[in-house]
Each structure stands twice: as C-alpha cells, then as structure tokens.
Image (cartoon, rainbow, N blue to C red; front, top):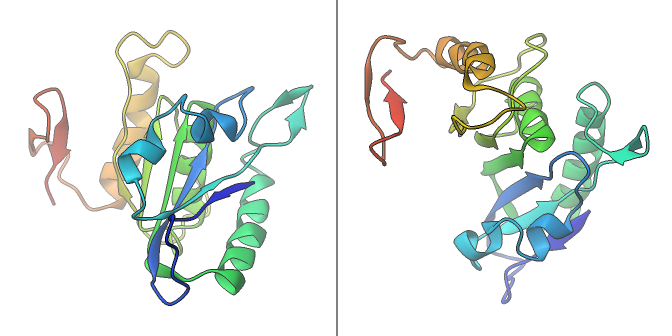
Length: 181
C-alpha cells in the first residue's frame, strides 16, 4: 500500500483516514500520480491510504471474499502507528475498487463512517455490520455496469440506512438525488 500523510503530519492530531481502492488492472499510482484527483481534493487535511490489489488471473483485482481480512490487518497496522480519528474513517473506490468499498461498507460498517463508490456495485449482501453513509456515483453511459444493474445496490443502502425510498430531494448538484431519513 501507498501511504500519503499530510505534509506537516502531527502525531498528536487525529486526522480523517481515507482508503482509496483502484479499479481492475490498476494500482496505487492511479491515485498518487493524478489519474484520480483525490489528493487534490483532500489536500493536507487527511491521511490517504492506497492499497494495491493482488493478482488474480494475472490482473490486479480486489477479492471481495478475502480482501476484507487484508483491510483488517492494514487498519490494525495503521491504528498502531498513526494518529487518526476513528470516527472519520472512509473508503472510496472506482469500478472493482467501488465494489471493494461497497463490500467494506457492508462488512466493516463498524469501522467505516461512509463510503464513496464510483461505477461499481455491492455483490454480497450478507454479514452486515453497522451502517454507513453512502455517496454512490454512477454514469448513465457506463457499458460495463449499466445504471439499472446498480439500482439493487442503491436500494439496499436506502433500506439499511433507514431512508425513505420515495422521499428524495435534489442533491448538491441538480443531477444528484438525496434520500431523506
């Protein structure tokens, strides 16, 4: 994994902690070298962790069955060595990494406060632990995961988080939808 500490990291300051999971075939450089602009958005306000997926069929990809254990080990290592606010732990991801953030939101909701998956879905709805806030982003031109295929994931989070499915309001952008409750 690649670790990005704030430039003036203070071991007495509890920073937010953000895990960022790359997509299929990617690696940490997608975040650290600018493919995604997460570092630009976060700036020096949080600790960023960019794990690398292992090879599966000769392609780096997240395994939703075994990689939550990797997350547990990584989280324990970070907790033992860094100062971060355990109430502000987040996961984001793109595509296969979005699936990983969905999986961790479901199975590690006792650790994560919120997830921000982009272009990916939850595939295993079992073993829910806790609740997380979700900002799910998906493009209508996605041919790999059409928007219709993502709606069960959206509906799952609406139900788990006690939102009112029929009660929506405009989100931060006119094309965004926020669910009340």
